[in-house]
Length: 361
Image (tube, rainbow, N blue to C red; front, side):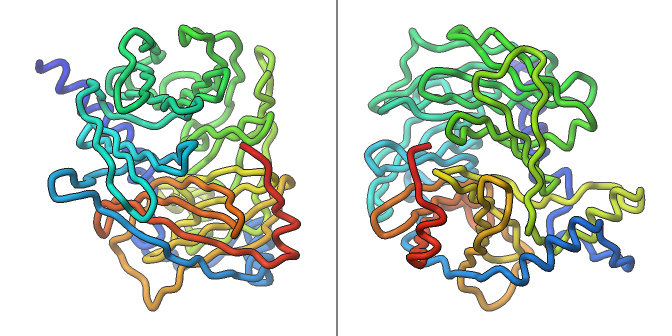
């Protein structure tokens, strides 16, 4: 029992790295030195010249009195327009229907710090970070005979799992171990590894599938790394800079790079690819902003929630997107000011809609 509690505490601490190791835009004082990297200065100018559209709020839910959200860490759209949310404090999955309707909380599956890794038809793939186990959930039930164990290289490593229709992938990031992306077989054994060189913190972030490409996100840099989904052993990821990314913390990013700050600032906790676009959750102090990038990493639009003023207590965690006849629907989970799930809609102009013409993930 003591060992289990210590292990879970360690896992929870590691899982908090992405949000709480680096500075948030509203938790650090702006540096007196206003210097920027030349690439960030250019991106700031591009962002200022890029049109902004309004995100329309559709609904929000905190769960129910009997089933409240407490730490809604990941969110995914299901094939029938429902939404699944994993709660890493309640060790459960929530399912919501249209119009913020709470449908069920799945809490009897032995979940242990669950993260949603993907969907396969009507089946949810869940990575239990506290138990190093991949589960498959259908009709509100964990399919016990199909669970898979994933052995992380060391207890202190962070593992980000992705499940596509046919394949699973794991990104492993650690201070004292080698970082890499692995393609896994059906028993979660690696069949190919792509090394991630450089400081481990540069790779802290989810894995996503963008067509035939893997997208490795970085919470602390305006960069994503790309790999073919069928990459060979030893492959080197391509780096794609997000040109036009602007943040209140770009000065802090420069200061950290120069050794004048002790922590890297968190810029974005999540992103979701769809069709020809990558939708990036850009951290702002009190409102939701989603940036739209094309395949070349160039900013196309800034999508901003209407707001009056900022808030020092605002923590969005994850993002997913779905295409509709009217445009795009975004699902966002938040930790504060209260744990909740929010849905937004974006109706692009006809010209912009052509640019972001979407196909399936």
